[in-house]
Length: 101
Image 1: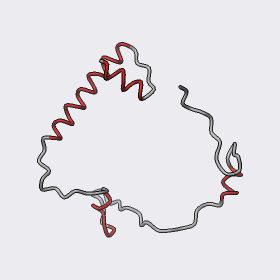
Image 2: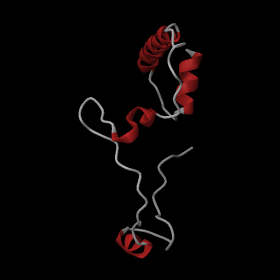
Image 3: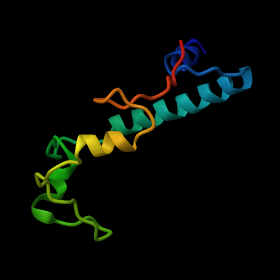
Image 4: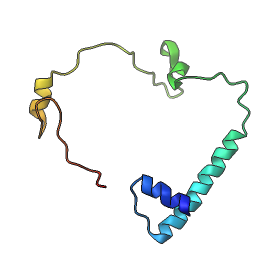
């Protein structure tokens, strides 16, 4: 249970007692699944740095979608973007604080 409490703390979550017990069951199930994956023989599988290597040269995925070409193009003008945001310091967006510690 200490591991669940530590994970909840790191995620900045407050868990009720019944949630902590359920979370422990879920985490144990996930760890069991990861252990099953470790037992798979991947010695004949070539390592990849990115999944995009599967779609080289415009190849398509099973559902017919392809990855877009990585093309350099101009971005939006900063002045027009800053004019459209609710709050800015002129160079960056200002957003409300969402994480409190």
